Length: 290
Ligand SMILES: Cc1cc2nc3c(=O)[nH]c(=O)nc-3n(C[C@H](O)[C@H](O)[C@H](O)COP(=O)(O)OP(=O)(O)OC[C@H]3O[C@@H](n4cnc5c(N)ncnc54)[C@H](O)[C@@H]3O)c2cc1C
Image 1: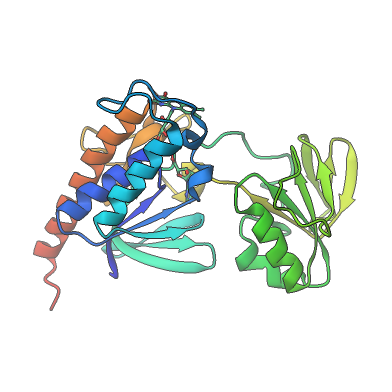
Image 2 (image 1 turned 180 degrees about the vertical axis):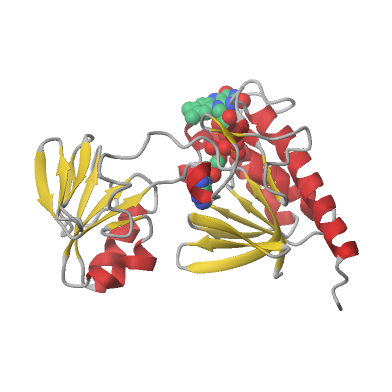
């Protein structure tokens, strides 16, 4: 396995898990959205994080990032799209690439908002979560980009450069969306099509398209890992932050409230520590040289 541990989510829980696992000499990759997509980035002041009161959310995240970088933790910015068990490890699909590890820590925060009407029915038939993976299928054709993540404008540009004809749909026009990409403001969305996708309905108006790229900063755990035991939207864990699938650990908001930085960092510590111990046990059971 190229990595001992892959951590999904670069917020407080994910970085805490990564730092702990690195401290135990494990190789760690953190897959996560860009910092601007981490909810804490928007906090004006955080007054209740022990020892560092009064920092903005952004300042706190920058400190966490700097700590992780100083520990030699590798980062990959992008969406993890799926986690699949494979023998003694896991395949993790990240956009159009695949990474492998012996253990996985889920630190994905809370996925806000449910699925859009028509989303589940059209998955693989014109609904995509990854422009890099599927853009090539829609060259020369109209597509809709539902932009909810910080990197979505860049993904729309990527699709345009590929030869697709994107229309960008969001609550408000992002400052970095080029003027030549049409923009539609809207919030109530429905994906339409008898068979493959034929249009995206935005607040009552149909936008004809052959694919809807739903670019969200996070994914619900159930979509990420098949068969994971959940309690509502939260991942069920034990005191070791172990989830229901051996080798999968979880920490932070994704395991339940209170939704607070201190709780996320504390759970991240346990998850990183226990994931490292899990990898140690695997190594003893299966010597590397066979
Ligand atoms: C405006 C605001 C103010 C707040 N103020 C405070 C405060 O004062 N004090 C306090 O203690 N807490 C505060 N919080 C709450 C705090 O931000 C959260 O509890 C904390 O960030 C949770 O950390 P986490 O690592 O579990 O999840 P998050 O910080 O949500 O990080 C999870 C990350 O994983 C990413 N992700 C999800 N799925 C995927 C995927 N499939 N692939 C790649 N990346 C993925 C998400 O995009 C996100 O960046 C505040 C939150 C907000 C929004």
